[in-house]
Image 1: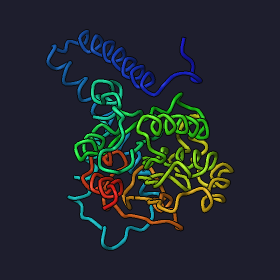
Image 2: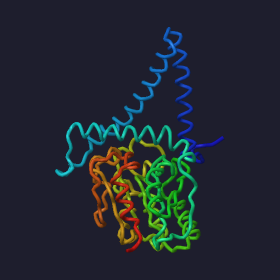
Image 3: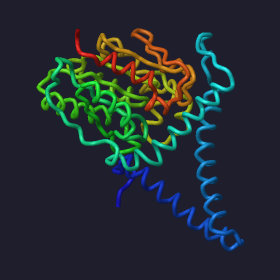
Length: 311
């Protein structure tokens, strides 16, 4: 039987969906005994599922508002745009955690690694907290369509330390370099994936990494991590010893070409400015939710630009 020390993120998400399905079966039986017809039961269960996921997203935005960084004047949006942004985040949450990531093999084909034909470098995409490589299915497709050589990795098991994930990145980088006959990669990390990339760099140096791009990574922690589970959640709480030690060494470990992209409306990294790395290049992505970055055209444009081969 899998334990918390061995279970992967895909298994966790499938298990949660199974548990939810069992709950709905019993709820449906209960509604039936109260006299509800089949159509009404289906609508009630659908409403329960939609409401539960909506409450999760609303909770993240409530926390984000409570611990917010002042929004730059050029990024301020009205109520309608705020509603649209939150709706996109909600749909991204539902799609990622109900459809794509629990069944990531159906949406993300195995990596096909070969020497880049355009003289560029392979790109290694690293997902975030309790996610898997399925998170990248949309952005990965855009990069592949543009001719990039793209690799992914699953950070397992859940609830492990970020340093443990750094070692998984080390093994994957060595595999990618061997398969593509290259000496370096471009490392892209979303959310906790950016911290895992930095943990790798601290342990192994930046000789294998030509460029690091982080997307909404809590470089200085996030208050939302106080609600998280596992060692890695504790390592993302602002001011903890692990983060302090990591940031004390950042100037030595980071490659010269490092880009930290952030959103002033991030609903997972709070305060939002904690996604910045002051000593490196920063990019403001504008009003985008944390999970919606998986589908954002602005993120696609950033990744295409930062992974482009030399002219």
